Image (cartoon, rainbow, N blue to C red; front, side, top):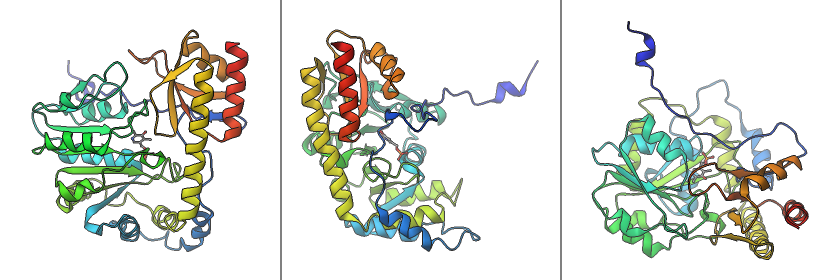
Length: 349
Ligand SMILES: *Cc1c(COP(=O)(O)O)cnc(C)c1O
């Protein structure tokens, strides 16, 4: 007996962090920015005037604003509905070889999901015991390479020298650097895209620019890469970027002072929080992101995760091999982190 069920694409979907409905929780589980977006974003809403019409399929104003901000041409910038959309398009566009695409075993858990969805062969390379990427692992023949820098959920950063070394060993495939957290202290690989035509750098407005709700991500790379991505995008949905995203996304780049101020506050809070956590008996890789990935020497992570939730403090726990004794804790406001620390002190004793 045949059934339509035989023809269904079966996929195990990505599980995003919980979004609790109550307002009075301390939410440190999805790496959102604790500060609101720049006031310029709300002011820009008045310029949204053309909802009757289809938006510009090329999102020209936003692409040009991003290109100008970073000193690239508009042909070197691709925008999408969050970097998840940008990364999905990149997987579809660049990972069509027969050899496996390489990425770390502990990393953004959307990568294996896209690989499965698009039927791309892949191989996960184990991080070392300190949760660091081992560059040599990426030297072998492959169909492409992708890793976040800083890595998620570890927060560990690679230097530009190490990234360039990985690129040098992978000249015949596309290398994607997912820089969702780069504004919290790392060096961006953007400039390497001028030197290597096979490098794509992906960033997002969701974390450092406090706009996870707007859904804007972008990629910077050689114009041939960007054209290939646009060709794929126009082959399934021309109007991914709506007018509010284009208008507000452009406005946020016009408030550099606000960006620098909130970014610095998060970095300062993170560095202070690290010290407090060490004193409480937690260990973690040195994070350059807006979260830390921490394990306690005696109390299991799962227990801390569940007990914190009872106090309406949400952190992220992954029940997965190698990382099931770790908590990923987003850096919120100083006050939120003080409340979390007070809970740890009370509970751990
Ligand atoms: C958050 C995140 C993204 C996606 O964020 P968007 O909201 O879709 O822009 C991509 N990669 C990593 C590693 C992330 O943590």
